[in-house]
Image: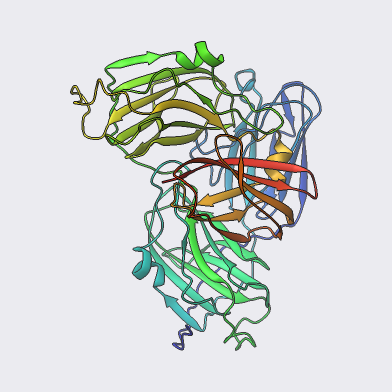
Length: 472
């Protein structure tokens, strides 16, 4: 579908994002050197650990006032890098040694830019009319990929989208479809007409909302501002929006009539541990879960992503509400009317997993004595920082009915995509070259309902990453 309306939008620029300079920080002797750094938007910072077991934790969970989050897992002999795309002040720390003063501050200055402020088409409201505005997560880390496939974008157009949530991170993409015929310049503008994110020669852009409401997303061809682009009538790339799933509100139930049980500690020695990037699926089949009970599990590792499941067995007689609680008793993940829940550990130690029947909090459920679903725990199995960097991807939607998309958030490479069932059988496999930010659509509606591993192997660098996916 082609759009022929013309509208000029003049906006004042405040900054732009484009990689410029690399800054190095040495990690050793319980210190970051330098521990106070001033850089420009678009600059890269590289931390190199040359002594001790440390990490970099600048996540929004630990420092909610940071403009965006970053960090890696505790370990020795690593190198970690992050490109800062938003101006502001960033605090970070080493989790094992911050009480000894192992902290750092990075100040990111905005950079003036002559980014294009003129759009010949739009602002369109397709995301509002099609999806009701910006996407929202159903649970932490579980956000839909809202993609419009009825048309592809033009050079020199814009979208206005409502419903953004303060503190949530969003990504606009035009990587799906036939992107590649021209180099795009993407920009994001707030309700005051100030630019909040800018990226040149790319097909996707991310930013963190600083208020609830409307943002405008601009698309231009690099070098074709203020004039009719030669590609103005070229359909090229499906527009899409997704989020990180950082903001999920809830009045979840915190009352459990049974537990907390410690069966995972006695049966498996605690939380599962990945070996060579592959995590075991620790399932207890001696009994099935009850409504209104909880489990306490030790041995979780900071930075690893875990999934609790009760999908095996005879789940389905009642609707479950699953929650995850940290060592302070704070709820950090919630999902209603489901049989599995995932979360990323932010410390080493104990978490509590809660199970309730939807709508039966504080009262004895009629299903309290009903065995229904085997309790199970597994993890993603990212074995190293390099693993995450070179083979990073996301699945949308998850859960799904066998049709889903994989977005490559890692590097350009040749990848093997495999779907593996819980018996270890590979039920789907394909190999192809996938560029960074490319979207691959998978149709596996012939598979049975259940939990599957989606394994991406970067054959160029021999790295792999595995995520859990639920087919309903």
